[in-house]
Image (cartoon, rainbow over all chains, first blue to last red; front, side, top):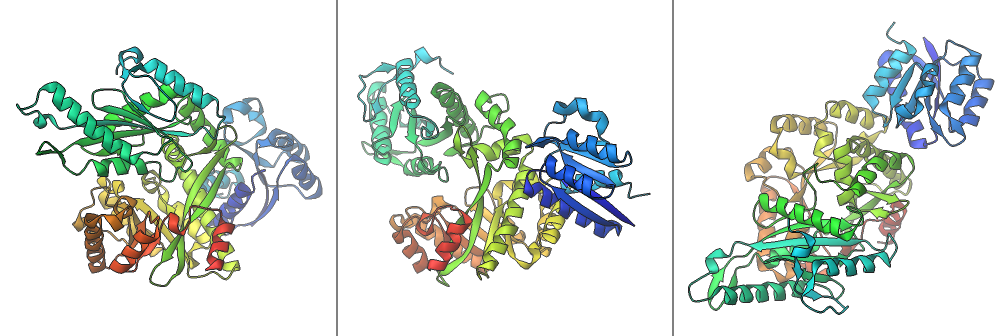
Length: 126
Length: 439
């Protein structure tokens, strides 16, 4: 079983951390997950245009050149099957965008919580 | 608490001139003007609120009340003045209550003066042939980090002093235990902390540890620093408690462990091996539900098992959760991490606990080390600690070594690993690496 995901965050520490959590999850589930990363909206949109359909995305809502909602809209325009999680320090500030996302996760990122939510996002237990 | 106008400032030692007595409001107003004229972050000041007590038995029939008060005030005042610098402000704000304001350039030892005061007054006093003890309680607060004006910060220091007094004789309090007394400034900083981690405002510095036996640097302690865009460097004694109160301490701890992994790689790239890095672990992190699984994840994914990682924990952690802690500490050790007991000597660890706990190292608190070359009691105490820990198979790190005399005396007792300003202040990693290379 293989999956392809995109993670977007302007803080490189978070990108690396999320990649490592996903790598740890791969070992547990024996599911191979290709992880693409982007540091901002522009990079993310390029990846969405260039690559095939993503199974899932985890997107930081507060990016230097826009919000995570901009990325979610582009992803859903390509495929409504892409599962998308928003990641933010302040979920209540983005209430108007709730309908675009399957999950709204609160920062800071905790490994076990991230794994649990990511498993649900990718439906890895079915 | 007295109102501002009820308090008279009876004496101030400062390079400005005051006429005495002056009322508290005038005193505070002149302080505020002084602080406002210097922009942050350079107007960072440490406020010590001190109460002396316990000498009621001194009131013998041969003295009248006025005479005994005057003798005590004179004794206390002279002793305090001997500990202060020219730029310090000392004000007597009550019967046996004093405020000291010190401009601080380093927050690593913000309670250093407080420890000196407690130590200075721990010796019995003699007046007219009569010997008695004076007890001290000290509260410490920082301006402008803990309040928006100097009066608020002095109030906070007073509340901390009362906390310290409740904790027993000769206690110092830097942390406010009560949630009901939190300034707007502290609330703002607490709210800003999560974003601070994402904005790169939290960085890490390293304080070297030197082995007197091997005559080289063998490790370093990692310390977090917060450079706030408005207030400048927020002292750890301010933001660490805020992180603990807000739950951000777990994230901060994880960041620090990840920083250690990057530092190990950088050191390896410079061919610096056989080098340990110590991370301070908050009791609040250690006792979270998923602590061990989180740690396992970090060790595996950041390949920390191939490096010499140490966790520093403080004695206070053993007041509660003892069985759980024994279990978790043993598990941590199985992951290859060494356990250091920090600030040893300032808490209540019994000899039995020291023998039972899975400790690798004790870090002797700097209050036992500073001035050790002039204090035979401290020297004998350190000697006893060395013998005790050696018998238990535990190593020692002596903290707070600030000069050659202290260093020489420790080495003469037994070559130890030492940490302190003599071997370097906390510094960025590239500076630490350069220092190691120079040796």
